[in-house]
Image (cartoon, rainbow, N blue to C red; front, side, top):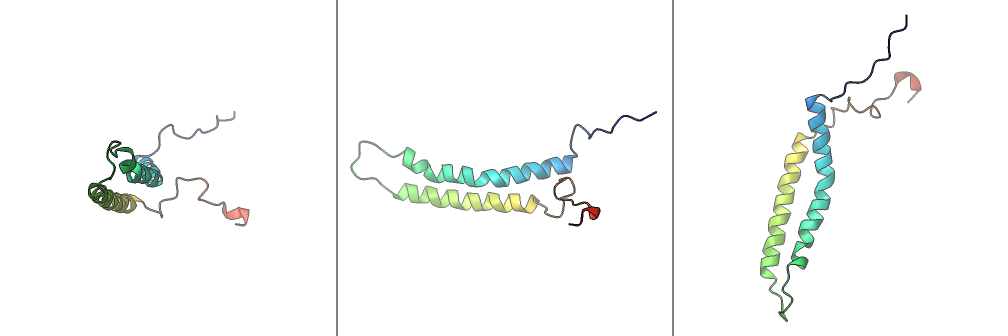
Length: 97
């Protein structure tokens, strides 16, 4: 009698799930950063002839510093050696790669 084919588990291990979410966050961070950097353009006053740029400069510096801090925190959690869960990262020894 032939045993039924093995199906992969429905849920990922907790460590590999968190690792993938960290990679997703690292990929999304530049998009969020671009949105935050372009935010001062949206809140500018429409009725004034001259725009006060000091608050915008402070805002951009704070956003820049926060994005760097978040990138450092995300990069510490990323582990490039833990690629065993990704089937494309492992190569078959008999395939000649």
